[in-house]
Length: 419
Ligand SMILES: Nc1ncnc2c1ncn2[C@@H]1O[C@H](COP(=O)(O)OP(=O)(O)O)[C@@H](O)[C@H]1O
Ligand SMILES: [Mg+2]
Image 1 (cartoon, rainbow, N blue to C red):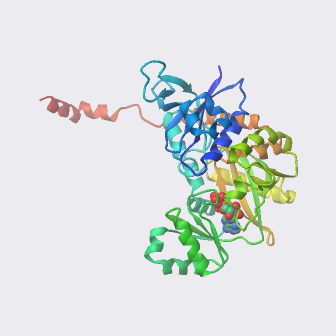
Image 2: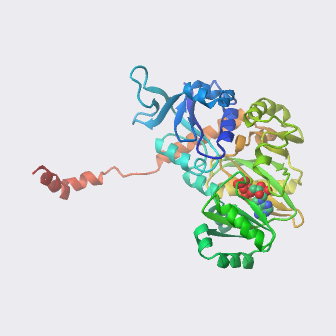
């Protein structure tokens, strides 16, 4: 019997399209002998769809045609399992279109990766791949995440955080606090977004004010960080759970501006790549294995060097730190941890975790010697094992408190109601 894997993707996030690409990459590497893929596409307005056309990346070029060829569905637990049912129920034909054994959220960004989808799949009560609600939400929150890491003795840059409402109320007080605690240059970021949206560098007070106002357009919580100078960025992926984990080779992403931008991450060098995101996603799907050995490669997520040009010792330091971050934040499945290195002092800072990384970091694992198919097998196994372990825990007592109350005081109430 094949395992029915419900792949949830899309979602109301700025990284909607990236999720569609990551999902497409993953399904093309899921072992067809072991798994049956049940695609659940979450449109930007939150409506869920299923249908075979969702398995073909090219069908996303014309959304209107695609969605007409799919079914609008709800994913529900009816007490006997998780079902994909048509909504509204059809007058003729099947209502239940499919069942799901394991949920596999492949979503990125706010409203999805931040615990929203983790909560939804937790409620379904079946095994699900990836981080739980807590790891997802802390993983998406730049402020809470840095506080948790700092508390665990993991080195992060110095920072000041505040709510927009506080800034609007007393701008001078907050600016004073920032200038007292941190030296320029600074980096101002929205507290809970991804993809470099709303991020600016500030070299003086005027630029700081501008950057804060810019970040406030995107969110209600702001983080101002000390900018790491002589910057080298290094990323490392981890696969595992709380007790066991493995780190991949490191990568060095390159950036064309001071801050690695959305364009650097997803669009890269236009001369060497296709124009549309969908086009690139498809080409990387086939090109990945062949190019993963190359030293410097341009691919769908910008330009990067794999393995990164750092010493063996630095690599080990980063790999160990990556595993520590994964554990401290309570992650599961596959994550990517991003680091900032000051090349003058050689100091390593943890920048952030991506709890559902772009392309599920398959290119890092392929370069480590683990084919994508094996990576997917492993993270699905981790999900099934976690679910089994969770089932052993006590989440409710058998006594029904409401029934017990009904026997004493409650029975009076019932009688009363009858009268
Ligand atoms: N403290 C910092 N010092 C120097 N550069 C930074 C710092 N924080 C972020 N950056 C730059 O900005 C980019 C985006 O910031 P990041 O925190 O990773 O946000 P996102 O979640 O949008 O990826 C980083 O990849 C890096 O290039
Ligand atoms: Mg980042």
